[in-house]
Image (cartoon, rainbow, N blue to C red; front, side, top):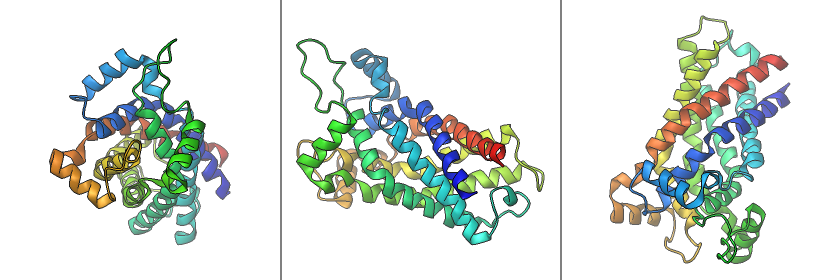
Length: 288
């Protein structure tokens, strides 16, 4: 049944999130702050100043929200393919859909995912950028006390539109790159799986990992802009819009700014998406 795609996506998304969140925190810091000399320097400073828990800032909110968004992604993708090809997930190994259909279904899932994800991702990025150590007697409290307080503060200080800051960059990031994500996964699975059979666990892990890397390499330039737009307005408005953010970033930091965080994104993408696809495939086979 189509609902199984959504449930499998939710569970696999939660597993991937827990595995990848520390990498994501480092990535967000590198993209939005200039105080770090690189990945190792960022990791060392987070650990020294904020302890191990610093890597998990902002995770409690996405553990539910991002998992739900992942269920939207996989559910919409699979059900869009069902509409386009009239084949269920189990039937697609014997009757594989065309790459055009896979890309269109992926883009549809990416677009709707971005629409659902925008407020949750904003709150996650704001919490991840809090560099204060754990609260100690006499020390000033962090700006946001948690995800609910963060959401309420943004709504109060920046209005309802503030919760969707960076949403256009997020939509432009996710719509095509999710299409790339599923094409890479399906292409590698077909390449290394006998016709009509289900891919092995090793094939799913490798295909899922490389799909994650391919999509994140393509997504990183707009991911940088998205993160900067989300932090804009925290104290004062710096950018007039997405295009101004792109031009200002290049003018101040060069073209290399668009690939800030690409290494940590790729390192995170392989294990996270390998686990996501493996759990997703096996849950559907188990229920099938």
